Image 1 (cartoon, rainbow, N blue to C red):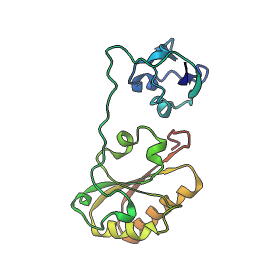
Image 2 (image 1 turned 135 degrees about the vertical axis):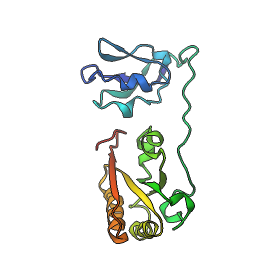
Image 3 (image 1 turned 60 degrees about the horizontal axis):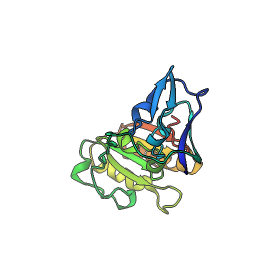
Length: 200
């Protein structure tokens, strides 16, 4: 049958084994220090392996392949969400709330959670999450974020943006808010590529 399935470029593969570890169906194994798709019918075509590959050796292709059956006796791992509070939109977030106190703050462009498949586990663990889009939202995030930083005891901030130029506005808003709050806060940052990988 014609369906979407992963393709591994063995020349690009660096043998790290990350794809095999995250493949919930057991479709990928390491053979001679190279990742190999060992069973087409185990591959669900969802591509959990794509964003973890540091070498860009995995891609999707649509071709004739055995129908997805799943690994016999293997149950796909179900991940619980890491969201700790509601609402998550910056423009809807309250200025003060108990969950802000001594919190580690994650401020993310909303596209990042869709582009990077393991976003919850990689970035949201033990953090209060606020999201927005500096291009589509007609508001200055720095004012709201400044007020949140002034009114609450925040431990540190992580900013996650897409590689596209308009996402620079998210970083600028956080930098301005930290400066205007007068607080000495450590700011970590990560950039997600449009292919779903972490660039920095």
